[in-house]
Length: 623
Image (cartoon, rainbow, N blue to C red; front, side, top):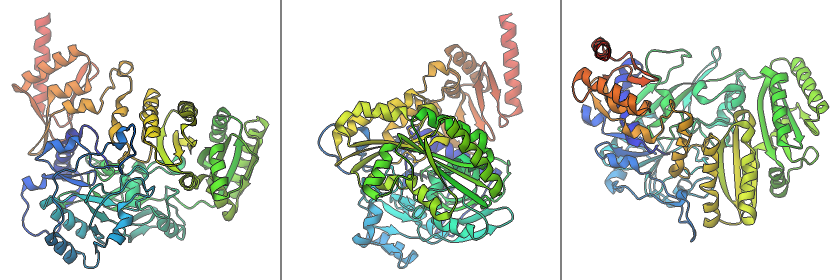
């Protein structure tokens, strides 16, 4: 659960957007609180990385709040650098009395019961929380956060705790707020296919519920037996079928979120089309708990396919694998639902540690293709033609097809159980990278060459259809020298080829200090698209009545690079409303794009007219 380095910009801007947008789009409802809340109080905090940060102390935005276990002696990478504990209060008996009254039998302080909530799934990150809270309703979450905010207590939201980047467990003694008991399905519309449920529902349980009603979830993950839909949304999980059904930014229709001060943001819409103002739910999809705690989700679910086929193929080269992908898109078209790959090293781990047998002959690369359709005969014909062409073109050397449920699961296990096999191979360093598809496996080969015999295994697998590589490196035990050799090499390599250091796992703990690699996009090649995270620090944002205000000259610096334009437009803008100009933004912003300033809809007519008069007078002076 991480915040970008421009935390001040993000956080203050979000507050301003919330204040204005709630009147435009959403219904903000205050639950029953003890005592009154002033307008100043309602802006006093935000959830950042699952903790409460008072806005009155801006410095907190420039530090993260997660730590790894103490590393071994030797060179350190940035992901092993522990952040300091912020001056939050510690839980007292008075606090425990409040929680026990609010959550009778669901306030956990037994160290043995807390153990699983303090350690991540990979056992690479460990916290020392002394309190686990298990609310069942949105109102209980609201009262918990309201109380913690007023008593300066840090909170760590936790779903299924299946994350791979250390973002789901506390570092120090933060209160763990678990959504595990918020597992009710609220409503399902079998006409529209829209499901509304609480955030603690386990993904596999939702899938089983929907299959009985002729539908499926639009995402499928290896951790579906433990992960929760709220955590899936908070991390914008991708999964195996993003190629077919898209990301959660498209399938999630509404969210209910509790903000850090306990207010409830009700965006739980079930409408597929709604353009009345800001689409606030998008801010929380992929925010990793930094902006609020998701308590309910409405999601669009596709019809259950009548025909499902899975193909497992072997290829000699990665180039052939990519050509097979092109062929599958062309010949399978609308029934193609997944295109996954794994290398021979992955298969060796499956055979060694899990005793799974290779269903085809040994090859350097393997492909898992899934098709889903409504007509078995039609799908079978398309699949037959595709396989015939792939074999005739020598793109694949061997393969097998499964149409029965048991055999389909067996073939999928060759892809889904790789993570499990890696845990048996030693300590695992996991990297979730997205790259231009032709570059995906080059990183694996370059990493093997870079590390030599320092690593036990270097393997690659992932989602070819999404350009997403899962690079995994193992060693007999955690090794600080090996980690220092991997990082920042892996992130520098990724940035060099315009990739992303986090494709679907999020930033969490382990990538918090590497977010700046998102900015290494060679701005000299993209002079008009250089709006980096650091650049946003120059944008001055402050909360005001009716919206938030922006220093227009600084805004020009953010979105427009050439110095001559910054001076010209900056001076013109200052002249419009005196010195220094502040443009009050109510619906949109005044920005400079290209060679001309663009006046957003939220800028008043007087701004527009005065700008036109200023430009006209300037032209007369020049002539």
